[in-house]
Length: 436
Image 1 (cartoon, rainbow, N blue to C red):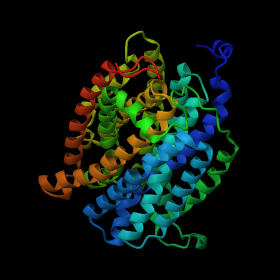
Image 2: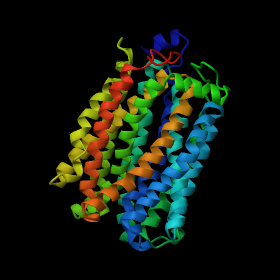
Image 3: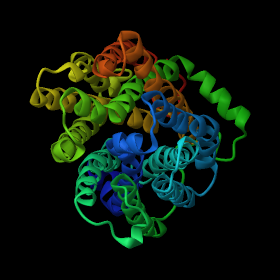
Image 4: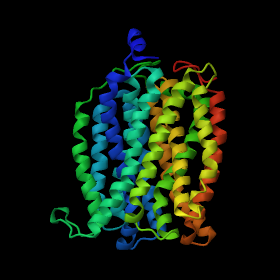
């Protein structure tokens, strides 16, 4: 539907919401960059702090899984009931504190605490941003709204590679400024991005809290009512979660271990692959966001039940062979396969976000996304990094990291390719209906 037709129905227009959506996308850009920044320079941190792969996996895994398991659902409920703008500001402050703490870490414990601050802020901010964006525009334009947010998210993922790698190389070849308070380039990278993050919080203060729309039980509904509504839609939500968690698991693992694979298997240093890796990640994110957003809006307009998920099914099927990117015989093929793989994950993830925003009532969105973030934290960060190192160990040690990443990637993408069609068959007709 056009903006004019939507305005005639008394619904908010996408064009009017665009400034706020851009600010939300900027916050997700910085938050996502903060999450993956350490992965780009972790080999240098590992060497300085004398850590093993198992310890890095523990820090990345428990540092993400534990706080998300404890806080993602309560934060999701808060998103459904409280002022979302101020929650987003608080979450941005959390990842900013985590960046500075990472730069000052002296061992496993301090680094673990720092990563907890980063992951809570970076991941839970997605819940608040999606909830705000959904109420800023009509249901038929939410795919486009989520497209803007996803562009910000993948801009942050690419920025972690591009900006992180560039800063690492620059700081490694020059005398460190005294104001950084450190001589290690990987620490200086986190200090600089932390300073950028402080400035990026300011625009969040100027967005407005939109009115909540499409509620069934209301924003003040007790937890028991929300759980009953969730249970009524279990045939739809459960396979949807299984599919998206499988995608999130291997995407997280790829984000953590792609740089070490390039270092060990192809002999590249961060400054040698940072720029083209950033372009690959950003290009995949942009194209995947555009395709996913358009596919979600078009699929939602189809008369077929669950048509909104058709694009997610196609993307996960294509991602199965692309999950073998760590075994590519050359760097150009590695980059090509990784780009297609990330494109598929981006498109599928955006379509699932739109599906939640369109087919679930308002009072369930934050809770449902928070529950997903909690499970994604446990599985994606708690299980995936450790699972990769475990499989690598079973295959013969740290030199088999690429093979382990490929094996886990194929299994999880196959699981997603089976789960999404089940969710499609049981999708509700609209946000006020139960599962089919």
